[in-house]
Amino acid sequence: MSAPAHKYVYTPLDQLKEGTLANVFGAVTFFKLPYRSKGTDFCSTITIVDQTNVKLKCTFFSGNQEALPRIFKIGDIVRFHRIKIQKFNNEFQGISSSGFSALVFDGNVDAPLIPRTSSKGYSFTTEDQKTVETLRNWQLGLQIFSSSRRHLSEVQPGQYFDLICQLVGKAEVDKASYLLKVWDGTKCSSLSWKVYVEDDVLEGDRDTISQLQSFTIDILVYDNHLELAKSLKVGSYIVIQNVHAKLHSTANEGQGHDAHVEFHLHGGTCYGRGISVPPEDNSDVKELQKVLYAVDLKQNQSLDPVTTSDMYSGQMSPPLDALERCQQLSVTVLPVYQQWQITAIANILKCKAPEKFRIRARLKNFQPHGLYQSVKLHCSKCNSLMDVPDEEGLNKMFEDRFNGNPNTNAPDTFWYQSAVWNTEYLNNRAVAIHFVKKCDILQNPEDSLIMLEGGSFRELCKLSCHFNTIIPVKSKEEHLEIDLSAPFIIQGNKWLYGCIKCSNIKPVEELKSLSVEVGWNAVEIAKALGIELLTHLFVMNLTLEDETGSLSAYLWRHSEQFFQTSPSEILMDSDLQKRLHKIMSILCPSRRQISENPWINCCIRSYNTNSDGKEKIVCKEKKL
Image 1 (cartoon, rainbow, N blue to C red):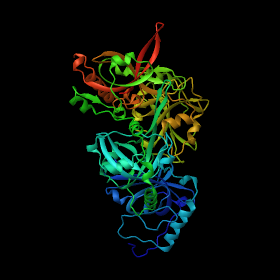
Image 2: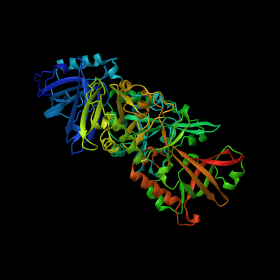
Image 3: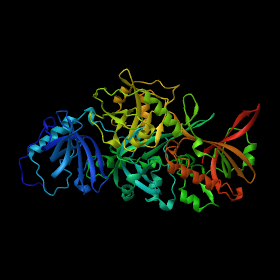
Image 4: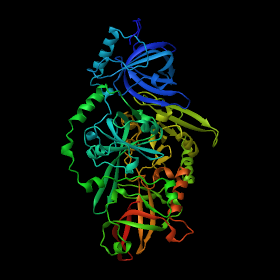
C-alpha cells in the first residue's frame, strides 16, 4: 500500500559521490539470489545500470531474507532508497544502510506496475511510474540485458542456462544431491539423462510423471541448494539459474558414440546460481502456464519402452554406507541396462567380438592398487595418454618458474587489475596477481578469475580455496602467456592441463571475449585460449569372476559415475582418496576368499586385440 507521497530526489548513476546516501533507479544486469553469508545474515549482490550507461554493483545484507530485493531475472527494474555509496578498488559500490528500502518491478514492457517489496508502506508517484516505464523501454534490445534463459528445446550441450519451469517430481538421491524433475512444455533436442530412484522416495503423481516423461528433464542439485530444493512443492513454478547441460559421451569402437546430456545445478552462488519461486501473477509464469496448457499430451505418448529405458544412463552409484551394509548382496548400480539378460562369463568368452553384455560377477583383483596411479590425462584429439604429475612434480614445476620473475611494473589494463607482493618464502620472491574484470567490474573472490605469476605450488593451493579460477602465467616481453608444461587452469581441487601437441595457444587477452553467460567455465576458457583440454580419467585393469569363469576388463571412466568420484579432483582431495580406497576394499578385500566378496552388476563390451601375434577377446568396462 502506498504511503503519502514524499518528494525524493534520484541521482543518475554517473553523478554518485563517495560517502553519500543516494536514491537511485536502474535496470538489473546481474544478480545473485539471496544466500546465507559466512555470518548470520543473508546477502544479495545486484548490478544495475541506467541511461547514463554507468554500472553500480550493490551488496545488501539482512537478517531477514524477505527484506532483500526480490529479483527474478535480468532486466527487472529496481528503485533503491538510502543506499550508501563507497569506493572499492577505485570503483563505486552501493551497500545497504539504515532505512534502506527497495521496490522491484517486472522488466517486461506490458507487465503490471506492481512492485515486489517487503515494505508495508511506500511512496510511488506518477513521476516514479514514468521512470520505470522509461527504463523498461530503454533496455529493449540492448545486449547487456540479453537473457541466458532458455527453453529446453533451445539448450545445447555444454551450455549454462536459466530455466523457468514447473516441478513435477522430486526425490533425495543421497545426502549430497537432490533430484528435481521439471518441464517447460518443450522437448530437449538431445537425449537427456534420467536419474534412477526408487518409486517410494519419488514425490509426485505417478500418472503425471509417466505422462510427461518425454518432456521432463532430471536436474541434480548440490550443496547449498539442497535445503531449498527439498522445500519446493510439486506443481510449483520455479526459476533455476545457471543450470549446466553437461554432455556425457562414451566412445564405442565400431559403434559410434553413446551420448546424453546431464543437467546439474552445481554448488555455490557463482554467476547467480540458485533457485527461486516467483509468484503466480508473475508475467513469465503466466506465459509458461499458457505454453503448458497448450501441450497436446495425447500426441506424445507413443514412447518406445526400450528407448525410455535407454534414457536411464548415468545412474547414480549407491552411497558408501549402503555398500557397507550389504557386503553379501548384489551391488546393483545399473538400472539403465536392467532390461538386459545377465550373461555368464564362459558364454562371453565364446561370443564373437564386439558385443555388449550385462554380467553379475565378483571383483577378484584390480590394478594398480595405488589408486592415485590409476588417474591419467587423455587427449581426445591425438588419443595420447599421460601420467598426472604428483605433488612433488608440481612443486618442482612451479619452482622452476621462479627464475623468470614477474613483471612488477606491468600497468593495469581495462580488463584486469594487478597487485604485487614479496613473499618471505625463497629469498623474498615477488608474486603478481592480475584480477580479471567481468563487464568492467571486479568480482568477489569466489566469483573471480585471477592470473598468477611467480606463485609456488603451496601458494596456488591456498589461493584456490578462495578464488573461483586461477590461471598460472608468466611474463614475456611485457606480455602474459600460458605455459602448458604445468596446469593452466586451477578451480578448487581441479587442476586442469592442456595438450602441448594439439593446442594452438592464443594470447591471454582472448579471456576478454568470455561473456557473463558463459562464466569462468574451464571448457570455454580453454576454447578461448586455443587450448585442447586434457581429460582426467580412471584407467584400471579389473579381473571379474563368476561361477563359470573369469575375464579381464579394462576400466576407462572419465565421468563421476565411478562411485560418484571425480578423477579430476581425487588427486588433490585426500577425503576422496580415502573414500575410493574404502569402496575398493569393500569390493575386493585383500584377506578374504573371493566367494565372500559382494556381487557386482556391470555392463561390459568385448573387443578383439592382438597380443604376441594372436588375436584374443578382452573386455572393456562400459558401466560400473
